[in-house]
Amino acid sequence: MAILGKLYKLERFLGNRKELGPVFDYFKQALDPNSSVHRRIFSLPVGSFEKVPLTGDIFALEQVFLTKRREECFIESHRNFIDFQLILKGCEQMEYADIDRLTIDRPYDEQKDLITYRMEELMSKFLLQEEDLAIFFPDDAHIGMPMCRSEEKVYKTVIKFPTHIWSGA
Image 1 (cartoon, rainbow, N blue to C red):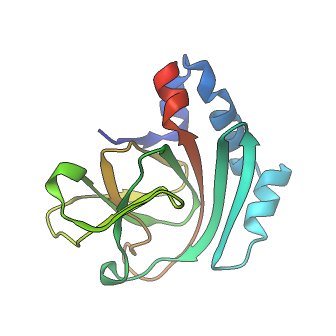
Image 2: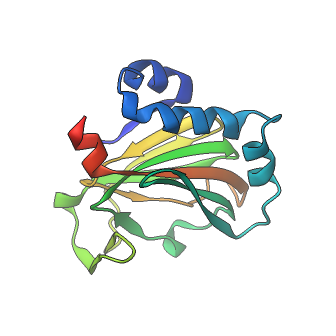
Image 3: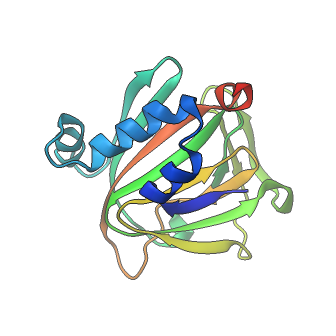
C-alpha cells in the first residue's frame, strides 16, 4: 500500500490530516536552501545518518550516502513506524513488495524496529528523484540505496512517523 509522488501533490492529498503538519513543515524546510534544516543536511558528509527529533515520537533521519549495487542492499520493513522518505538531491532506485510475498531473513528487532527479508527478484521498482516522496507502511517491505544508472551521492531525509499516531487520527 505504499504511496509515491511529488511532495507538493501528496501534501495536497494528505494535508487534511492535522497530525502530518510537522512532517510537511519539516520537508519544506529541508528543501528550502535558506533554511537551517537544509544547510544542516547539505553540510553532512557521505555516510551520515543523523537522528533529529521533530515533535513527540516523530523524528527524522537525515542521510547522505552513495547509492550502490542492488546485491549490496537489503529488504526491510518496520512495525512501529511509517517511513516518509524524501529525496532532496540525487536519484535512488527503490523497490517495494508486500511483506506477505517475502521470506523473513532476520526476525523483528524491537530495538531497531526492523525486519529484514531474503532478497527477491520479483519486486516493484521505481525511481525517487528530487522532491519525490515515498511513504511505506508496516506491510510495505522496501529496498533503499540501489543506484539508478551509476553510483551517485544522495541527500535524503526519512521521517519516522509512529503508527499509533496515524491510526489514532
